[in-house]
Image (cartoon, rainbow, N blue to C red; front, side):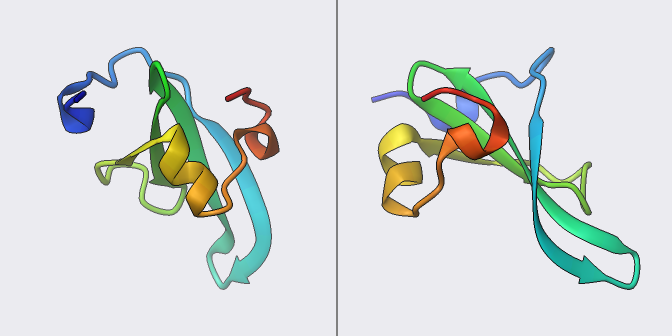
Amino acid sequence: MTDLYGLPLDGIRFAKACGGNTHPDGESCVTLARIGDDVWAMGDSKRPHAEPLRFTTVELDAAGIDPARFGLSA
């Protein structure tokens, strides 16, 4: 099994999807990047310095998160 948090994020480009939720300091968006075979990193645009969470493609599917919404292919 792959150690999701052992995969490096250096040089990874995140794509952003916004859901229309607005806050006084702007719209809330989620960022997503493929970091390995069937492994993804998900972050919060409001907290760009926070460590992104890591998920497998199966876990994203189970949560109803489609990488295509971010312009990415699974």
